[in-house]
Image 1 (cartoon, rainbow, N blue to C red):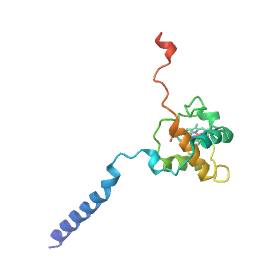
Image 2 (image 1 turned 180 degrees about the vertical axis):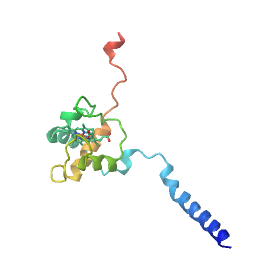
Image 3 (image 1 turned 60 degrees about the vertical axis):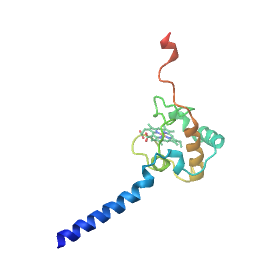
Length: 124
Ligand code: HEC
């Protein structure tokens, strides 16, 4: 009796869980969950705050930091890392970069195209 009840309860839970997952299965671009940001404002902040120094002017990455453009990072993960980086990157508190500014910076990075796959000069 208990087994049957558990079976029914499990099935009901699974149905509920699967139902709840339905909307999340649609491929949502990272920008969808991000607060609205202005690309031009973000570009200015990217320079004035100094993110470019390690990640490049276009967020293309370099010796001091990884590429951030065309990465499709979710905003939640992006902002969490900026606030509490786990490795070499310095942390940026809300005092230094308010959440609204972070949204602008994110918008700027989202707008940057993916870098070319090869260095054109090497193709000649
Ligand atoms: C002093 C160099 C430096 C500066 C300045 C810097 N970063 Fe970074 N950042 C890094 C490095 C290095 C990493 C790779 C992980 C690590 O070592 O912390 C990183 C990683 C990241 C990541 C995580 C990427 C991933 O793959 O998950 C994000 C997001 C990020 N940086 C955003 C920013 C933003 C936004 C700014 C400006 C507010 C900034 N960074 C300024 C060096 C820097």
